[in-house]
Length: 166
Image (tube, rainbow, N blue to C red; front, side, top):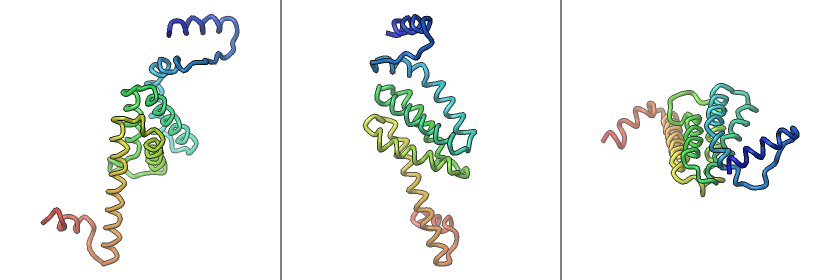
């Protein structure tokens, strides 16, 4: 299939500089298998180095589409690579300061869980870890507000002498 496609594209491109559209999805999987790794590298570098809102949105759209394609065609390694890379950009597993870009990554990961849930297979662990970390942060925040309200110490002092300390 790939050789036939290359020959057809080569013949068509010599005749005219026109775009050739495919009428079958059979070409998507082999093409995506070739371009997914450079796409992952490009999207990751751009997302890491840019805080420009439009660039971040374009990168997140790229991640979403790549995860959709890899999930729909059963490309497990590719899907796992894109989902895990996006999960790392949430910064939920680190102590780094979060920016709006990281919050958008969280939203994108949760959106992917909703829209591509049936195709995620083992990559669900990243979405579930994201939800778990968000819940943990919410509990910590609620404990901090409660401690401030009652004039208590820091939440860390209360946690160490609480349930786990007894």
